[in-house]
Length: 422
Image (cartoon, rainbow, N blue to C red; front, top):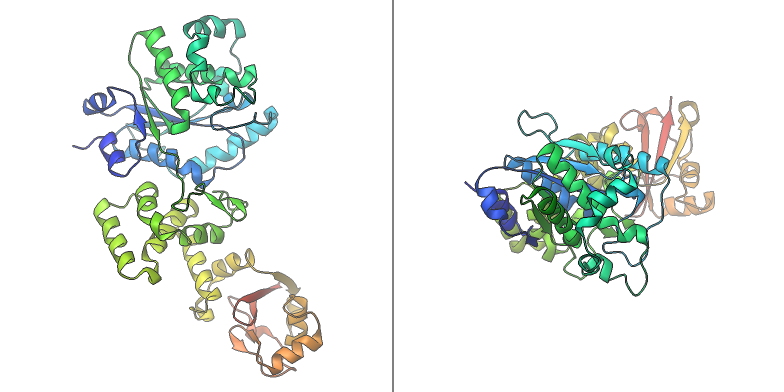
């Protein structure tokens, strides 16, 4: 039987692991955890690497622990940061924790008997922790030289690092020890920038308990073009639909560079490797069809936002590219469109008899009625996909799609939506 390490290595997940992990996994499943600090009220797609690591742990028979950092968020992790993180209030931290918890529940099974995922918040044990007890029970096990050798500290020596952030690795090490003692957790996973923090935890468990614990870190993803993975022109691609709409989320994956498709399918889907090779071969045979990108976008959008939202997003995309009969579109499709294109609301009474020329001005597709009329003469505008051929064209109940919507269009790429309220 393959182990967690075998599955992750086959997909390119393993950047480094502590000695003896393969032998431990060969003896049976383990309990492992990943920590998420609540620096924002949403995870972004860059966080999906460790999330998928937890999901594979559960699929291999292990028990995943999601550790949300309501306590460590008060300190701030210096790993990979050139400057100190801003200090959040307890209210901000607690708000972010609650939002992140709900997102993580989409990826892991918290109900399966035997190895159900567990959700923990380190605020429960770190906020009540007494300083003198911490210094006695944790600090005495680490020398200054040991801590200065860690990359997260060494990289900040020239620009400066506060004592608060300097002590972060000890706080994270305490987390690992606490979970080992209370939940028999033997493995901590994270990004490769967490190696120093994770091995500090294995060191603390070894010194205090005389047993071996393990760490496993994943590569930090970059794109084939050399950019940081998970960024769009608008910034981070978030899992929260209020920060990154499902349509934009879908488009992010659809716009993946051909060179990144195979690797991202391995990282972010549960598709068997043989099926991924089939998709990649199809992609290579006809890159224009973007088979790999479409499969990636569909798998990730369905997992994060649900199958129903995916259907709406795909149909909305087809509408905007002129590939879908509008009469087939339901309310969920127009709800997606309403978040992506200019939208104007009118009453039912106001819509009845509203001139198309005036409607084009109201939704912003024309600056004036004169411009709208000239565009109509040139057949440059359409209503629900049909060209407007007469300047006196009126809208009415018969124009409503899905009972409430009228789609207006200028040229091939400019759209706007009228919504008729009851």
